Image (tube, rainbow, N blue to C red; front, top):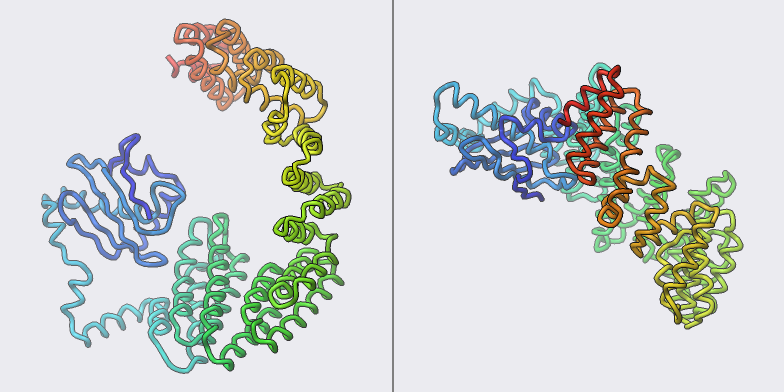
Amino acid sequence: MKNETIEEEQMNINNFKNHVDEVILDRGHDYYIDGKIVDSYEQGNNEYVFSIEGREYYEVIVKIDENGEILSSFCDCPYDFGLICKHEVAAYYELFDMLKHASQDNKSKQEIQRQPTLHEVLEKRSKEELISIIEDIATNDPIFKNTITFKYAQGDPAKELEMCRRLIDSIVRKHTGRKRFIPYGKTDDFIDDMGEVLEKARISSDPLLSVDIAFLVLEEALEAYQYTDDSDGDIEFLINETINLIEEMVMESNDSDLSQREQLFNKLLEQSDSEIFDEWEELRIDLLRICVEFADIVAFRNTLRKKIETEIEISQYSGNKYSHEGMLHLLYEMIDMYGTKEEAEQFLNDHLMLSSFRERLINRYISDKKYDTVIELALEGEKQDQPSAGLVSKWKKIRFKAYKELSLIDEQKKLAKELLLQGDFEYYQELKAFVTGDRGEFYQRLKRELKNGNSWQASSVYLRLIEGENDLDEILVYVRENPISIEKYAERLVSHFRDEVVEIYSAYIKSAANASSSRKDYQRVCNMLQRYKKIAGPKNQEDMIIELSELYYRRPAFRDELSKLK
């Protein structure tokens, strides 16, 4: 939840659009236009409350001062990617409208407060009137009709499932429209409606029906990739939410009778064979991993093991490495849970050609403090995975930890140096700790070695080394050879080498100006000049602006941008 006080540049209800991310602004405006604000009122002290329909009903509280400045803004939705969510934006639009109309009609804000809420209006109506109201709305809104019928109807599971299908179809038609496509920025509304269907699965007292509903949602979510612009990953969110819900329902069924658990188990196994997962092997693996929850029953365990072994054979024959490795891990997890320690260890040894299994075996030996075996496995891994620098580095780091546990100083020194030269700067402190003599001499030797290295890793470590030791003389040498780095290091160097830093910075800006040919380039140069001012002072910046203006007098766009700095 968010509870933010608007601080930096004060945001006013009259200009909030200038302060909100464009994507969030558009989504909030859609909520406002689509009538998602179901209630709004002032609760005193210039504090306004809004009830907004989203995936759930969310409450937004906005406090303003007499001039319309937004003092604080709060929404109880789970959005945490920024200060302001789409529900708050919708509330701002509504509040702006409320205040505008109050001013135009010469009404006081107290009259806004006296406006009855939807709850107050409906609670005074009879049952017959409420039924009539709902039926009137449902006549013109098939989505509303299907949602109400599906959400509150109880009876034959087959009929409920059919209602669910009809509701999903109507949701798809509503959001795809005539173009049969949901454009960017509109997908979250579709997800909100699909979330309502998923909620029925969550609250149903029939776990078998719940799983069936969840699979209908999952199937449509996978289909939705074909008719949505899902740049924001909303569909992936719905898929993950559905898989998690299936897992929750299965775990809750652990206390159910054996017959119901068997039906759930068989349903999941059957669904895992569905063609919809042919392009989504990770989801097939997820479903079979959920089935492991049933493996406490021997008969289920044997069935599941046979199923996984079949999938392993199929994936091996087809060459699907992702599926093959995923299924092997599932089989190992079952052996680890229900087999002997020796069986689990042997399974890992039989699959050491896969780095993930080697790592699992190494972790077992680390837990048992068998560090000699850890070193042996790591060395074998380095040899096996030589083409993959990332894996080789991982095995070396594991080997270093084992050396450390065994207090093998010489081996640690050698490997720390090796890892450092390969780009892992974290090992500098490890290596430095072994120095018993002059650390200054050690630093100079290492710096020369890195500076003379031919690899990009050596160059990267060299820079981190001189930065970490704050070697200003060496940093200046680097800047002389690489003027483009002046912006990065100017602030660090200016107190000791002001004149030369200003000279290098000035030459770099002139070089950038000479290479500029578009307004965007000119703006980039002007941004440099802004930063240059902090280093060289206003007078040097002013002189540079004059010089560039005279030198490039035939570039009016450049001179226009430069004039904005004066």
